[in-house]
Image (cartoon, rainbow, N blue to C red):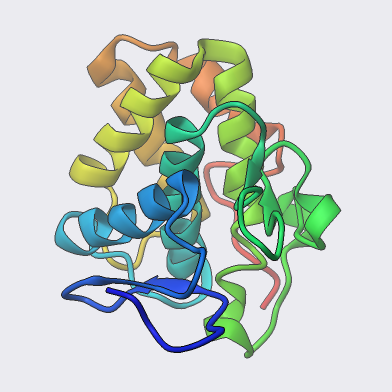
Length: 188
């Protein structure tokens, strides 16, 4: 659905995708569609770590559909808004030690999504995009639950790797490289 005049965003509202002018581009469309899938599968709550995972999983799917570069939204009139390989380029943390404790943006769902985004970039580099996408989708639809945090996501991705025949060791290593251990929790 087209939304407003000069509205520079897009969103899934629980029943439909909504776009401002110029926002139905490939990676953004895949991102919003994936919010719908997440809502109907993992049901990740849109706050704190689970909300950051919700945003990140949508970015992962958007990048899978538009793999020509590592940025999200590069075809928008406002330009790219995130970078999967270099979250810091858009003021996002890339490692667990940089996790941002905040009450804004539902506990930093857009900010902290940079950590699992970088994990996914690691996965694409180590196991390939096809296997990474299979792991992501299997984790999203089978193992993640509404309140999953980053350590839970690590376990979900590792379990999913075994299901789809990918290297569980490589998947665990992709999370470990960003400081997400099996027991990691944010400082807040």
